[in-house]
Image 1: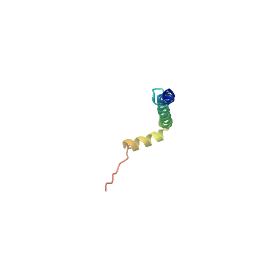
Image 2: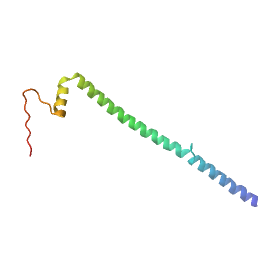
Image 3: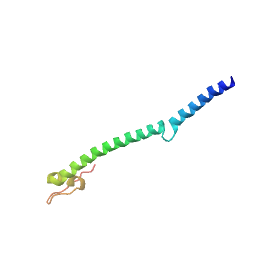
Image 4: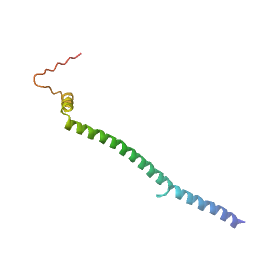
Length: 92
């Protein structure tokens, strides 16, 4: 009778230990899910950076090839003027 209880509860204890080991050990399910989330986040970040990189490459190409666009950017960003032009600032 006692041996039966020991076997029964012993088996339950062993199975519980194996279950928790499967879930929470270094190579367990929780670690796997954490790594999987990390990979998904990294892939999302890579995708965003690839799109930004494509936009920046197009901008560089446009700046190198289109002189009118380059002039427009320089005028807006740095406030450059052509020779003979005057800048008027109206402040409120």
